[in-house]
Image 1 (tube, rainbow, N blue to C red):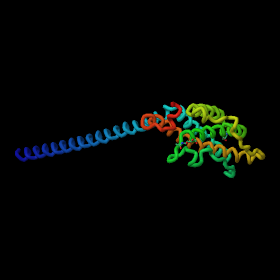
Image 2 (image 1 turned 180 degrees about the vertical axis):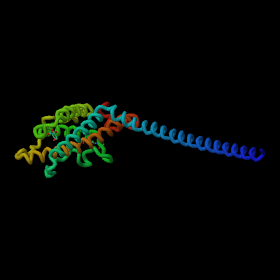
Image 3 (image 1 turned 120 degrees about the vertical axis):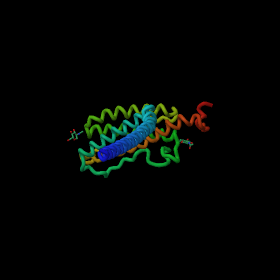
Image 4 (image 1 turned 60 degrees about the horizontal axis):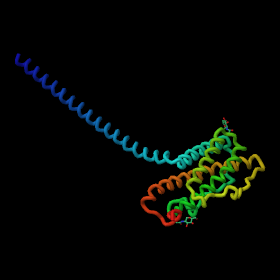
Length: 230
Ligand SMILES: *[C@@H]1O[C@H](CO)[C@@H](O)[C@H](O)[C@H]1NC(C)=O
Ligand SMILES: *[C@@H]1O[C@H](CO)[C@@H](O)[C@H](O)[C@H]1NC(C)=O
């Protein structure tokens, strides 16, 4: 009886040990899970906040938002054209109006009024060139892009001082070649490539301009920014 009792006690102890060990492992697992879960939730919230700020900054400002949407649309149109006419080469080149440090649109040599002038002049150039694209490539995207380009044109004008605004009629128009079908396709490809690059730079510069305008007013007022008020 004693032997049976001993083995019973032994089984009980073993059972208990397993039970306790099992519970411990479970508890440990649960703790680890909740810990990592907590961490990942915190991480999501944190990164959500950061991107939320950026998203807000992007969407808050109509000119920045318009430039961003337009750039996305032009990039899609460019991709559509390139996929439909994959044999058209890059022999024709159209310079983006934002192409050198002296344009005032790049960090290090930023000049708000000069950069806005560049952007406004550039938009006028592409308003005209998009008519050329429209004749060559009847994508459903073209009319929307033309419409949004004129929206951007007006929003950029609103940021400029009246004396800085470009005179639409005084912009000299580069005559684009139209002689052969091959040439027209090459030019169309060049316009879309150039417009896309221009919008990437213009979007970045406009984001910078609208940001520094907010903070700049409080932080430091440059003498030339005060002149219109005096
Ligand atoms: C910015 O550019 C404008 C126009 O080119 C010029 O008149 C002005 O002096 C420049 N401002 C600075 C701070 O360089
Ligand atoms: C481009 O090619 C696609 C697929 O062949 C076609 O559906 C589309 O209409 C073409 N786009 C244009 C503007 O020709």
